[in-house]
Image (cartoon, rainbow, N blue to C red):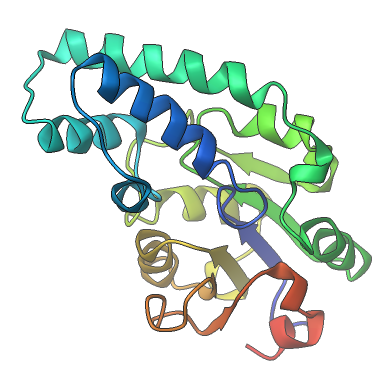
Amino acid sequence: MKKINACLFDLDGVLVDTAIYHYKAWRRLANELGFDFTEKDNEKLKGISRIQSLKLILEWGKIEKTPEELQELSQKKNDWYLQMITHMQPSELLPGSREFLQELKNQGIKIALGSASKNAIIILDKTNIRHFFDAIVDGNMVQTSKPDPEVFLIGAKLLNVPPQQCVVIEDAIAGIEAALTANMKVIGIGDKVTLKKANLVVAGLSEMTFEQLNSL
């Protein structure tokens, strides 16, 4: 029996890079509220929910809002973001994404998405990779954000694979912590120092091989 029977993928920063669209939408909102923030600040929003991101941005701008206003602002940002991602193309997949998904399919590995994004299905459809996934867990299905392991545990359950036989592929520290808490192996996409808790770190899926995955 293979040690690894399932792969669970984060979306942003792993398969696609929609960070620029998030940044543009959040920055437009901040500008409307009378302040600005940088792409470096935007890095701090990686892997956290929309409302958590909004609260952090409002802290930077020293602005307080009621729960009702938070919902309105969150919706406004999401509407702008949706306008942008509806124009996404398959060419916007990160290098190696489609090839690695295909390799997993060829090897009989089950595949799930484990993303905080509430718009994940739109992105999967626009980039033409939805058919690779046996299960999709997105921000509409979870109560708690990473580093809580809920998103990955739901994914493993839907795939009917024990957590110990799952590998998570993530680009955010919160996601790596969530995977480890879920008792799963984890591959980090990005910087080896930042993601040092991962079992393996690669720059991108173009560097990833099935042999590396199975050796974890």
